[in-house]
Length: 298
Figure 1 (cartoon, one colour):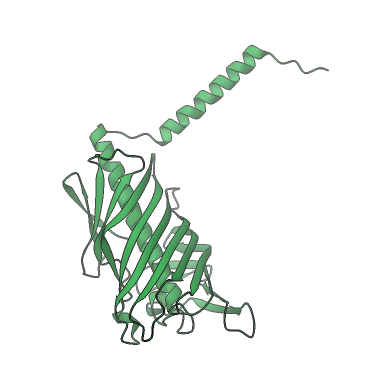
Figure 2 (tube, one colour):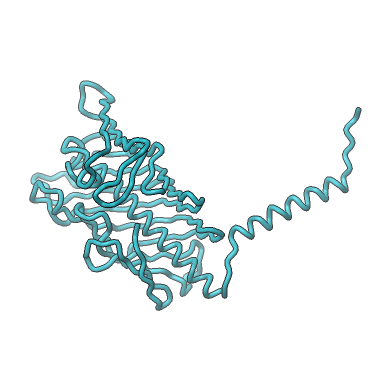
């Protein structure tokens, strides 16, 4: 039996299929309220998303350092806060040489809650080319079923020590990139994030105590956030250097300017995320077109 094709009916099917797809896409990006309210919500959501991503991946930097003195500076990040886990698995990739080395932080399938109040499960895997305080050393981190609280963390986090070789050490600098980072919530909301930062140590070089180490963070990022029916693409730039300390889970100071991708140069819908004046807390503000909102960081 020959297959008979009816052009008119086929065209109608294709038309209505395309129409349904278009309507679905429009619905996913739909917003309610006045145009000004929509712009405020988009600016606020993108700034909050950038702050959340900064907090989560800032923790990855601290944890990569904190495994041990062999690969970094022992006791920072999760190693300064968690008592019951993670299990630390060390694999020498070119025995008997110490480096490169792969370190897996295995929080298990049930996970644990650290002293910082955050729940972690799954694996964080970092490969080191040398101890991170050595100029030229690199650490690349990936994730295997890793959750921070209820958020599924994905992507690649890279640290490179870009300090100038000097004796004695007078400064320490790192280039940090987050590539295809993604934070996904159980309800399907997500943050996609790419970031390029320069992190410079400005205090604590003269001691062996990591808890007095303070860093200045500069650079930019870009991302995409979905919150329910709202999807926003944004770009951000640090306008006042961020200040991070190994003894605090959150960024303690600094400002980040966030704007929707491809927005006009004179758009008033710019969000400025202010991490505060130096206190170690999870509070920050977002200012949009002269109005300031208080937010709580993750």
